[in-house]
Structures are given as structure tokens and as C-alpha cells.
Length: 172
Image (cartoon, rainbow, N blue to C red; front, side, top):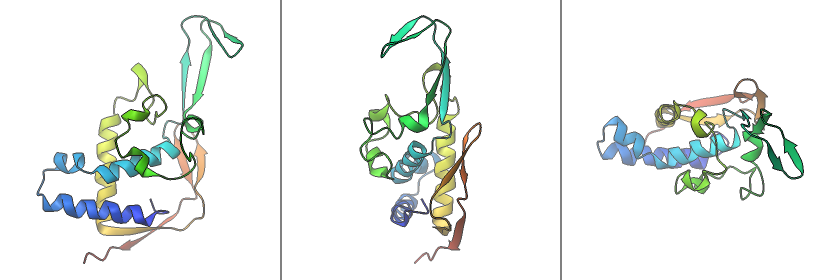
């Protein structure tokens, strides 16, 4: 978001609009469409769960390869989220791709995993992120003090050298 100040301003405009409608917190979160788009796109580019593992329950064949029953399979969500056959301009930050929500990408978008092992806290996490981002944008302008986001792949994907500068927002 720091690298894209135009999206910060769009979130700020959305906050002002939502505040004028005197909504309770849940309605405010549900009406934070722009913020949600930004978060969805950020998680597409930098998925917190950047890989998932599975064990196949029966023998399977794919692309000339045999996978025995019980094979351990590892799927790179990071690479799926940036695959050029699945995404237009895959390496660009384009929150508008989520204008209609993330359901249209359900076969290729897995920031919280998928299937029966999908993160049980995904909705809570989204609500929490919307609240955190709107509070930050309401009060501050965020600027990058880095050129490119590096990554540190641990249990979850962590940013590396993503140092930010916050200045108090002029609320005119």
C-alpha cells in the first residue's frame, strides 16, 4: 500500500463515506470494498500461507508422471498467485482485479489455503486487517523507505526490508 499512494487515498475516501453513514463496526467493515480489494491483492502477491502440503489418497497420474498413493505433495501458493496463465499482469499490484470480490478466482486464489484444511480464522483475519488498515489510513499517510519488497519464507511469508514511514494525515 505504501508503494501505491493512490490506493491509500481511495481507502481514505471510502472511510470518510462510511463514517458519514453512521454505521456500526460490522457494517463499516462490510462496506470497506476498496480496502478489501487492496488486501486481497496484497495477499495474492504475498500470501501469508505461501505453500500448502497434501497427501494423495490414491494413485494418480499427471503430465506423464505417476504419484503413488500416500505421496506427499507441495503446492506453491506464491507461484500459483503469480502464474501468467492464471492472472493478467501477474506481478503488478492491481486491486481492481478484485472489484467483484475474490470468488471469481476461487480455482486459483488461496491466501488462506483451501478445502477442508482452509484456515478457520480467515474471515476474522480479513475483518481484523480491514480494521487495522482503515485505522492506519484514517490517521496517517504511509510512505515506503525501501525500493522493493523482499521476502523471508518461514512458516508464513514475512516481508524483508519493508521499512515504512508514517506521517500524520492532514484531515481537511
